[in-house]
Length: 425
Image 1 (cartoon, rainbow, N blue to C red):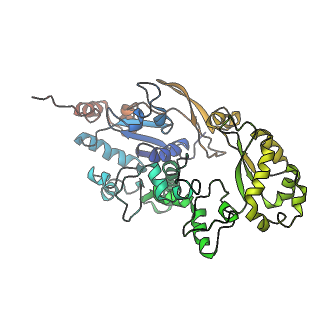
Image 2: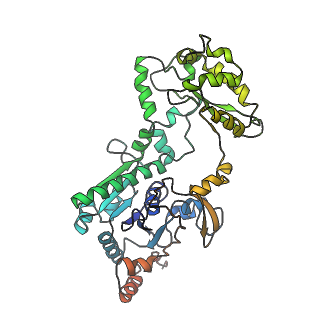
Image 3: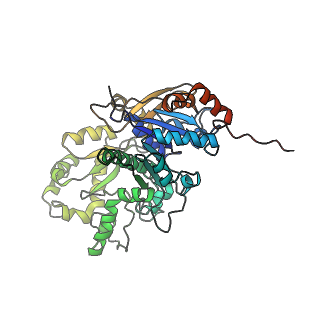
């Protein structure tokens, strides 16, 4: 079956997480992703957080499925010639270098356009234009500067970063959408363009409800936040709200049976207004359905701590899965706190391809996430990540059309090998 992006060729200069997330998604949809790596070294994550000695780490393998790898010394004159031909043959160049690196390599936007006017150059940066644009950014820095960290955690505690990689992987997803959009526009204009996604921008975009609340503060307290019911004044910035719901329906994480020994024996419980009467019956408080302090949502807001404490008395008599089964019968919104172990063993996630097992020639079988987006006419198949330089000759011959003599000449130039260290005299 033809994949959605079959025929699209990606020149992948990305490394670590944000860029590889983007190009892996494009590869899952059928694009031919050619990952350019430094000879002898490769993407730095190949050797980071290794759980098995002398094999590619899970950090690398889980971000580089379905790609081909070519090693290339872009400082070598012959290497530059190969790179020029790759630019000529590809549709998109993706990079997450520091600011100005491509220019210093001799491949500015203008240079790339002169080689291939249809080329789309897609970049991930830490910040957009402004006072921080030259600063180095990693995942947690993006979370801190994008508004996520200041609004995550408990009100009286330090700011916290999230476990989800919203800065790196989140921005990679944004860039992938930008690339596909630019490819579609190119079908009408015939021209390439630059696509940029900044990590700070991506995190802030995901924090839009907090930006919403920042503006609401000017008109009074945020009544759905716990501190309103506790009589604690609000400051001039959105506070950390622990596990309060970010929407209009109050919610909390509540203990379930076994919480004393199981760190994940909890459930998220939302007191949605349309099912309030069912909640009252379930927890043994039928009088709350008509009591003026509890019957209406506005009346309940100052009493949320009391209400959730009473609901927790009920959830503590059930396992999180028992509670979920009972609550779902009454359409009461809830969700068990699932550990990574539980998710890894979930058969339904295996069946949908959300979690996949992959065979690798040096590390054996391992688990990975699969494509979270399902297309009915373009199902994704997850194949293993490439070994360093595994497809170098294949790309030189099949993509660039070089003859055996030319390939031998490129090998002889040292463009595909680690730079030789000169012996000390």
